[in-house]
Length: 201
Image (cartoon, rainbow, N blue to C red):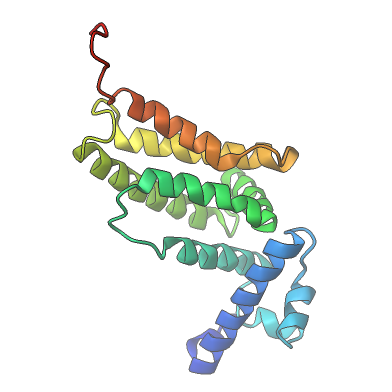
């Protein structure tokens, strides 16, 4: 049972475990990183490590939550949230193990409501969609996005492109994930560009 995390030393140790696990998965890969690898790296037995989590799957979800917290540490008034999202997706190429983890767990959780990661992904998609839509709304208000575009619909499309490109990228690492997300954003901005003089209406 995850009981030790309620005490100061337990909180610090859990944070150390997650920081170490995040680095190991990013570097070695999801399937190449075991609970034993993480336990050895933080000086614990496997049983000792799992005292900080409800299960192995809970550990994996906690790693993803930790990555989310790092990604979320950005300017809430970002003047170009669409470009920032595209750049974030592009940077995922630097952490292939986390892309593997995200794709594997999201597929398993989507098809099984009882999966430990199901609620995490359900909440995450809703939260990220809301955040992106809010940023797109700010761009629209500033005249930098086609006013006919529904920000929430575009946010869902951008997330779908991101997830789909991560899958394609795992088959072909030459595919630029961020570039494809940026291409969709450019399409949504194209309708807001002023026409050249003499162009038909």
